[in-house]
Image (cartoon, rainbow over all chains, first blue to last red):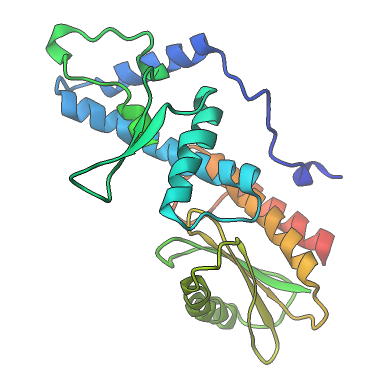
Length: 137
Length: 133
């Protein structure tokens, strides 16, 4: 077939942890320009994650589900917790919980997010959680 | 033969329209794509409709309109003037169409939800159309 018809390359499905950590640390430093506020920094990381997530969703669904679409909330949540997490981080998320106060709020639990693996937060920014990037995705 | 391919965004905003060997005016084909959006909504209201390929949306006097929706609610529309288009052909066409769309979104400079201006996307669609006819 011609090169245009080739399916999306699956690649090895693995990315070097050092490569990601380096890129992510640059991302955090870049987002830190001109702001010392934790909320703004987290929002910026989340925004970057958002644009990653938009693209990755189409690709993952296309690869994993072909021509089927998930239309139920439960299905898409479990899809995120297992398939998406596996593709992004190499393992499924630890669990999903439904919030008791707000029935339409769900929480995906990851005990050791890869974004925070090599980060130690300075005292001034001690509320910062770089996993805001994952939240954006 | 395929007369027109179109991409419509989540809020029913037009993202891409391309016309192939036909004398029909662009305006008329735009209108046909626009009308098909209502049919999308109708079909999607059925809660059992959980496939991406939506099949024949509706026939006009000269054309047939086929639809496909992605998991991100982006709609792909194809207008043909044949009377002998097979469903299986359209399915595989849409799959490739979807693939090209995904490739276009990989461009970090492309803002999702805006008009697609990628030359590569144009070229792949041209290729896809000419290989299918």
